[in-house]
Length: 175
Image (tube, rainbow, N blue to C red; front, top):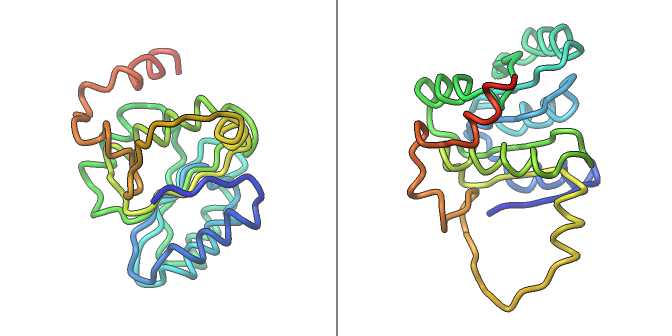
């Protein structure tokens, strides 16, 4: 299932309702680890793979990694194709994908990151925090019923081959 929220409390409530004790979780946009702490407490017997490329995250996440043994922090830009490919080759099964990039800004980037990472990792649940995506959803209508019950878009993710993802290449050359 895919859950989208904007309010931080709702996003964290979605974590509480969806993350299990043995889950392996990828958190994209961990910043200084406010939500990472919650995830780490919820999946005590799993691993939190936390990603952020902001300079502020380095010291804060290093300290959290000392306090919580199940947190593995990566100071990296998740739009870089090699980051995703290297991680996907090395990681265990991912149960939950959490994406919080800029809160209310850049819904196109948030959606691309969600789409590409979830298509490759195929989580059971994805939790996304972004105001622009909610605004888009609530401002649109359709009579078509296309729906995925997993944490990725089932209608397109089954045919995704990482080396064929042109979207990553469009970003990576400009990073």
